[in-house]
Image (cartoon, rainbow, N blue to C red; front, side, top):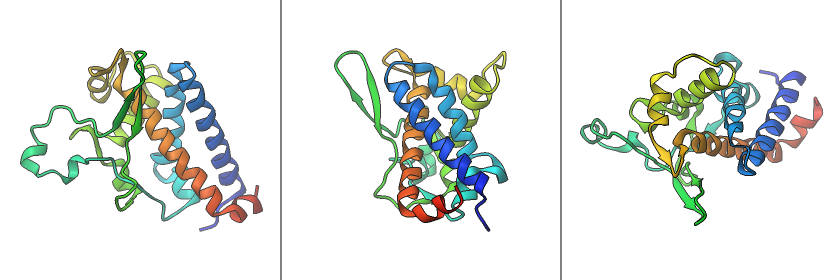
Length: 192
């Protein structure tokens, strides 16, 4: 399958939007996690229109650290909250997700990557991205869905847990995109 000029333009624009909004989020504009979620939805979980797989058909992404999928089923069923990320607390009342994905592990196909449980067996990467993008970013629904109700019930210091995790997912996807730009510079420049 050929990569179109529009795909390349959209890919580069998504990279720029992710990068700028991640920087501004860490600079204090915390609500920009919503924009990051919308970009992630377009890049990773938009069905046949998913931008990353249009650009890189065989793309594989690293699994979350300490995946629930690796636990025996009888243990997995009873877990109420699972936070697979490493966190850095700055001593000033703030924290940052520093390591959500296991880059030493075998990468997964994007569908398997999206289906990974994140906070519980019922909250996957895809459900979190779609929930934030669909309920808090592209739309403003009157009520949260079960994924957001669960994610909002846990705080990292005084901030809803899902905000930091959306940004950490965005940082990982951005690093994958920048790696692809370095690996395939001629493909991306030839049609831009």
